Length: 320
Image (cartoon, one colour):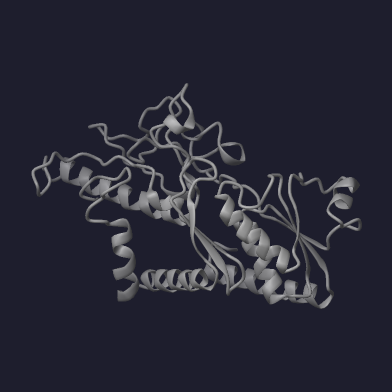
């Protein structure tokens, strides 16, 4: 049961022993999906279990579909040098013998890891609050510009007697955008946001700040903040950090993309190789330290989501 840390620990240990056995048998492994999750998983297996025969496929023309060409080429070159077979423009069809022949595995793979897509798990929410479309066929919690849960008709769900939302949706559970009927995603109030950690944390900061604002308005009778500006729930924006992707290529290599947005292949690969691997180690160590309430981690990460002044992007000028 991975709701508990012991269940997660046991799963990791079970997978480790499984991979040890595959390595001992020189088994073949197919990774379906060459997004950053599939690429990271394939290269981790190759590094720690070098006798496993790896193949990675994707339905798109190359790996790292939405990221810039430079990052895709860098990762593809790494996988090629590591002996990982790559097949693109290739739809996964495990029941079709022609599919296996096409990827040079006529006897099929010993193990398949499917690393494609995401699936909503919001069964606890009323149907009226869930999207009819979206990744995995829909079922994501709809939210308005303040991240308050709304209905399919656009009304705030569980609003109080003054119209303020009392239930908020942040992170992977929400729809990840605020659409506008009849307009293209580029023109939506909030275009689609990647389901990665940074936007989830940014949304949590905004939602909790809105709860504080509503508490001051409703229960403390305050109408302005310390600077005299009117108090009101803050609107969400497309967070600039949602365009940062660090893709590991084993423990000693990686590439980092910054400046990406909802436009396909946007962004710039600005760090790569061993410096990027060190960068990822620093991110991981400092983030874990923050979660453990360590002073170093908190000093590093507090201002990431509590930037005092925004000079660019959609956030408020003076931060949240």
